[in-house]
Amino acid sequence: MATELSYEQLSALAREFGTPLYVYHAERIKEQYLQLLTAFEGADVRFFYAAKALTNINVLRYVNSIGCNVDCSSVNEAKLALHAGFAPQNVLYTSNNVSFEEIEEAQSLGIHINIDSISNLRKFGEKFGHSYPVGIRLRPNIMAGGNLKISTGHADSKFGIPLENMAELQQVISETNLFIRTLHIHTGSEIKDVDVFAKGIEVLFDIASQFPELEVIDLGGGFKVPYKPGEEGTNIPLLGQKVKEEFERYADTHGRKLQAWFEPGKYMVSECGYFITKVNVLKPAVNAVFAGVDTGLNHLIRPMFYGSYHRIENISNPSGEIHTYNVVGNICETDTFAEHRPLPEVREGDYLVFRNAGAYCFEMSSHYNSRFKPAEVMVENGKARLIRKRDELKDLLLGQIY
Image 1 (cartoon, rainbow, N blue to C red):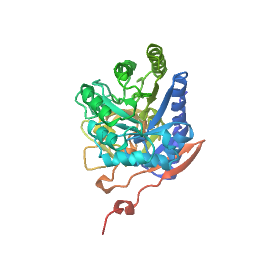
Image 2: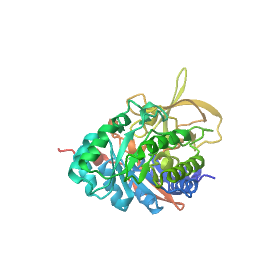
Image 3: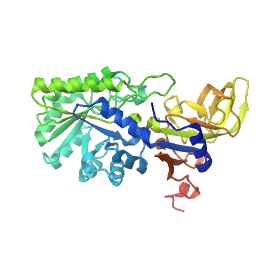
Image 4: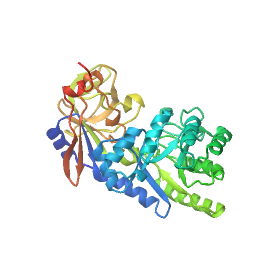
């Protein structure tokens, strides 16, 4: 049974810390990680939490404490990970279209590096040669993901080195004596079909023989988690079984073992998160009743940016008569979280909670309309603690010269 916080607990947190409020349940993160370990038992695999999903330093420390590694999409994320206590050998850095200076900075930290352009790969080889192992991010020409905005491996994607550039890639490796330890792909997010990962394995195994020092196949992340009622996520046990079988088959056929890496982000933290809001006003209209809450796209942009669905629950009146509402924000944009959503009767002052609010929610927030960012709270072993204070006016002025 999945670990969840009760309506009573969430309501108490809203009263104690105010709203809007992000709440993260630590044990749910651990539960997700243990599911991965169980599903991949017997396989040579490492998991790197994709920090871009949620970088609060307390979350990073918790992820480190349960034995997971960390994947970083910028050198600053890598620095945060090291600050949180991760050892350099447990930090992976993969970015795209960055300056070579940033890659140099990442190298100086002693962490794992994947490079996604031939230009930067050549520069890396010319400077470091064979002295520092490096990975290559390839574009596998696989269309996958919940929608085009989160599909990153297709033929028109900006990410990775196209497979059709393999001859040029090999020339650079030969000329600069690069030590290629890792081949990496990431096809997208919210991938339910296990066969997509199998196809990625096939693509990389087909070219692995061209890299005699290869040790790692990094298959990225993208595991789907359920957002809608009744929705299914990626079949993780099936994926674990398939990965184990394919890697064992490769080892038997080619006489060398390769390690598999994965970079779960949403899978690790999405379901640990709750976003609690308060209903400011009810506005009846001809075709809808608008429930206006004390937040907006500045705090939760995913529904507007991706058209994503978040389950919304009225935790103040869970047994009320069901009506339909348009749940909307308080920003001077059309920030609609849900249209014609059936909910127990909503009253002004009720708390509405958004589920699956752990990944890419606070992390994508802003100060748009000069509104304060919400507080963040972590619940661990039944105890709640503030892990980020709510903004004040001075936070809006921070960094400005006046």
